[in-house]
Image (cartoon, rainbow, N blue to C red):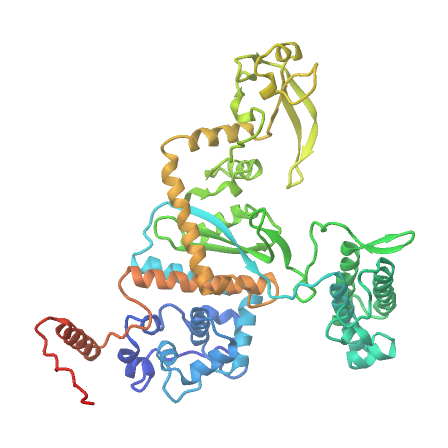
Length: 574
C-alpha cells in the first residue's frame, strides 16, 4: 500500500541539521529544497495497491534516490550504502542521520515497477515541470534540435562459435527447468557438458588453420543445436499455449534458431559460417536487442542509439528515446517531436537536425505531418563528372538544363523502387539527346556512358523538398541554424558525462530508463544553475569556511609580496 511522507519536517532530519554543512547551493542541497514539490507520493499511486498491505517506503523518497544514483553514477549496492551513511544523500533524501531509509531490493523493485508501467517518463517530466515553475522554461514556440549518439551495449559480444554456444546454454536451462534439474546435470546426461566451460572455442583442441577440422567443429555445434530444437518441439507440444513454461521455451528456441539462420550456411557438403553480416544480426545472447551500428564509415559499435530532442533556447532536454543500433538516426524522429510537445506543453515550430535527418523520406514525413524540418542536404563533391546539383531542374515546367546550357523535356520512367518505409514510388529521370551530348565539349566531364548515349538525371521522389532545402542552406539565414545544431551535441555530451556511453542494463527498455534518469539529472542541474539555486559541485559555502578561505589567500599574497618578512637562511658551519 502507498506509504506517504508527512508534510511536516522533523527537527532532527538531515536536511534541517546538516544542509549548511553539505551546502545549500550544492546538488544535494537543491534536492533537499525541492522535497515535497518535485516528487509527491500521490504521483506514484498507480504502482501500489490502494487498500491492502503494509505501507511502502514513500515513493517520493525512492524517486529522489534514483535521481541521486544517476547523478553520482553508482550501483544499487553503493546507493544503499550512501543512503545509510553519506550525509549528502541523507540531506537530499530528508531522513534522520541514524535512518536506513530503504533496502537494495526495495530500490530495485521500485525501478522495475517504473519500467513496467512506463512511470519513468513521469519522473523525467518533473524536471521540465521544475523548469516551468521556476520561470526558466517560458511559454513560447520551441525550436527543437534533434541528434543521436551511440550507447555501448551491456551484453557480451562474441564470435559465431561462442554465440551459438550461448544460445545452446540458454535453451538447455529452459529444458532443464522443466525437469527440475540443474542445467549442468541435465547437460551431462545428454552429452552437452562442453557448453558449460569458459569458452567452447578456447577449450577446443582444433587446428584453426585446417579448414576441414574447423568445419567439422562447427558442424558438431550445429548438430547439437538441431538436436535441442527437435527436443524443444516435443516439449512445447506438452505445455498449454501461453503458459510460463511454453513462453520460456519458445523464446529460447526462437533465439537459437535465429542465431543459426543469421550465421550458418547449410550446403550440400556440410555447414559453413556465412560470409558478410546479416542485416539485423543478433550480436549477444545476453542482450538480444543489441545490434551492430555505425556512427560513421570508420566508427562501428555494438549496442543501441540514444536519440534526444533539445529546446534550442533553454537547452533543456525535452524528449529521449533509445533506438536499435542499426536504425537510421532519423528513425522515430516525429515521435520525439510529439513527445516534446507533450512533455513541455508547448508547440514545436521548427525541428533542426544534421544531414542524417535530411533524406527525402524524413522530409516527406514532416511535410505530411504539417511540420517544418531544417536539415542539411549533403552535396556530392570531388567526382570526375558533373554532379546532379550542377543541373538546373525546374519541376514546374518539367525541364532540366545542363551545365553547357542545353535543355531537355524528355522525362522517362525506369521502373519503381521501395523506400525504407515500404512505400513504392516510380523512378523518373530526365534524358538528354545522345546526338547533342556527342558534340558537346563538356562530354568528358559529364557523360559516363559509352558512345551513342546521353546524360540522364534521376529525379528523387521528394525532389521538390530537396531543392527547397538546398536553396535555404545556401542562404544567409541558414547560418543561425548551423549554430543551433550545436546545442544538441552539447546536451549529448552532458548525458555521456552522466554515464550514457555505456548501458548499465540489458535491453532497450531498461537502457531507456537509464537515459531518462540521466536526462532528468541534466535538466535539474541546468535549471538550478541557471536560476542561481546551485553552484559548482563539492564547493563549500558556509560563512566560516569563506572567511578562512579569504584569510588564507590574503596571507599567501602577503608572503609573496616584496615587503613580507623573510627569515635569514641558516648557515651550517663545517
